Image 1 (cartoon, rainbow, N blue to C red):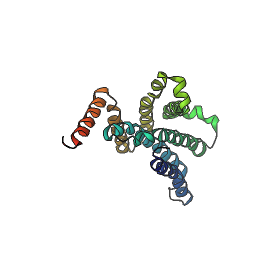
Image 2 (cartoon, helix red, strand yellow):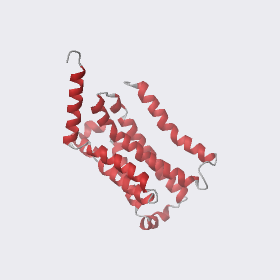
Image 3 (tube, helix red, strand yellow):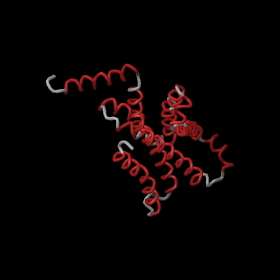
Image 4 (spheres, one colour):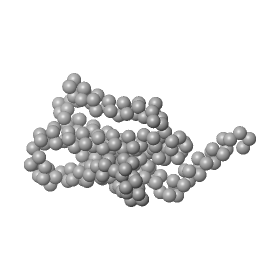
Length: 207
C-alpha cells in the first residue's frame, strides 16, 4: 500500500478521537449533559473532516505531493462514520430511542431535516466510494461525488441552526468552506496548477 506510513497514523488519530470523547464522558469531564456534548462534538467532527477532505486536492495541486489525495477516500469514509455516530447519538441521547417522536422533532426543529439531507448525501458518497462503483458509474461517478458541495452547504446550515449562540465558530467554518469551494472555480484551480508548475521550473538547477 502506498504511503502506508502516512495512512496509518491518520487512521489511528481519527479513530481515537471518539474514544477520547467517550472517556471524557465516563470521567464526568463533559459537564452536566455529556450526551448532548458528545452529539455536538461528533457533528462538528464530521464537518471538520469534510472540510479537510475538500482541502486535500488543492493541497496536492499546491505542493505536488500525491500523499494528500492518498488519504482522501479514508477521510471521506471517516466523515460518514462521524456523521453516523452523530445521528446515532442524537437518537440515543436526545430522543432516548423514541423514534415515534422524530416527526414532531422535525416539525419543531427543521435543522434536523437539513442535517438528514446532508447525511443521505454522505451515505450516497460512502456507498459509491469503492472501485467497483467507479467502474460501474463511469463519468457519472464524478457527477455524483460533486454532491459533496451541496452537502457542505447543508452541513453549515444545520450547524448554524444548532449553534446560533456561537456565531463566531460557525463563521470560521463557513469562511474555510467558502475558500475551499472557491478553489474549485476553474480559473482559480487552473491558476493554482500554473503557479506550481512555474515554481517547479524555477526550482530546477540552472534556471
